[in-house]
Amino acid sequence: MTIDDRSQVPSARRVVVKVGSSSISGDNAGQIGPLVDALAEAHGRGTQVILVSSGAIATGIPYLQLDGRPTDLATQQAAAAVGQNVLIYRYQDSLDRYDIVAGQVLLTAGDMENATHRTNAKRAMERLLDLRILPIVNENDTVATHEIRFGDNDRLAALVALLVDADLLVLLSDVDALYTKPPQESGAERIDVVAYDDALDGVEIGSTGLSGLGTGGALTKVSAARQAAEQGTAVILTATALVSEALSGGPVGTWFVPAGAEAQTA
Image 1 (cartoon, one colour):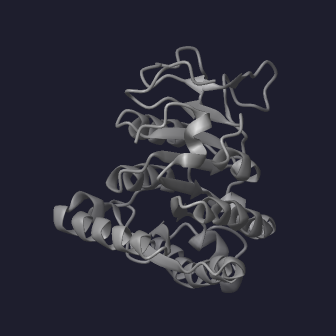
Image 2 (cartoon, rainbow, N blue to C red):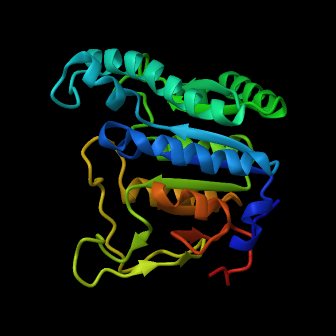
Image 3 (tube, rainbow, N blue to C red):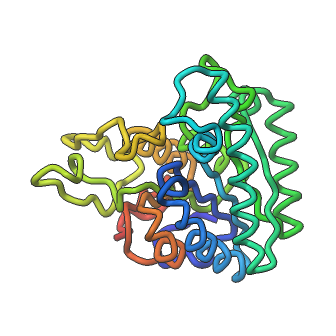
């Protein structure tokens, strides 16, 4: 189904939610609980939910006793191997409160570009959803290379949303919406709605995040949102702390109108 406006969000059949490293690692690891609360609420009303979660490398850094994010590929892979295990444990530990079981799905850019791998991934996620399992998707950082990787999970989330024909994609970060310029700058105005063919002329979109833990920023989120919206998937870009309101159809974040929907979605 095409979600024409926010009021239809609670009735969405299938939703992909993407959360960034800065929102669920380090000092913000405690946000996993409220995030799971919101996902469980949607799951409980019958919506099929897929979570695309960054954070493996950031979660693994303290266990490797590193001072910051490693720059060499081998250490990034080692941090991801440790962090992915801890991250999934944290999600499952929180999901246990709702008797929801998570299923881990690790993908590389090569998987999404290979027809056989892509079909296998789609089939696996479809079956998980049919079984009422909540798939948690992440880039497979232990085998991905600098040359062949998503680079950020916003792009991965858009591809997953298109792969499983999701009605809605929710892109979460540490910023509550898209603004006309970086929100910390004077005169920045929140953008409530973006038409799928809006060129966003005059909007200053930065390329980096605020925390230093993640790899994406407003630029990657807008690009991912456009990619999904152009194929008929509605998109909400908002802060992780506002995910419950977003999944309930509340007037939060920036709404990217999907192709084929009416434009008057405020």
